[in-house]
Image (cartoon, rainbow, N blue to C red; front, top):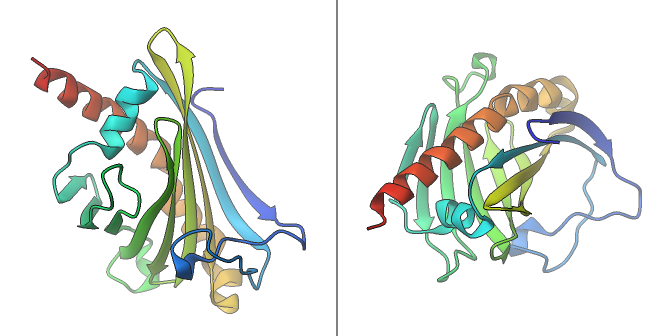
Length: 196
């Protein structure tokens, strides 16, 4: 359903393993020490084909992108499709984390399936967290696409996880749906004005 936002606490079954983020992809699974992770899901519709939406995310882009309180620096562009892209992100976090209200993450893109889906894995601080995000583009026909986004977030320190994980993840993901939709729509407008 478009515009749906869902936040949940997910308890993974004992036999589920998470991808080995140290190898940059699905190289070898490792189990999380705690099977509880925060999860955020949302979907929205746009007036564009999946290929057009894909181009907004994976087409030519500047090395540094700033959108609101978010700054993304492309450190490595990856291959021609963007597989292996590495980015450094700066974004807002609660001030009580004593980081000046700013967090940083280092993210890499894998499993690109043009124009249907891609995945990123990330490590971040100040809470020393792991995150995984999956974006899927659903072709609705007639030049429309539904964008589905799912992110899991896991703080590695068990004390910080207990005290802060849920609150911090709710804070950093609370505007994801509106920011991503606005960013996609702005990117589509920009690309359409460039076409002769």
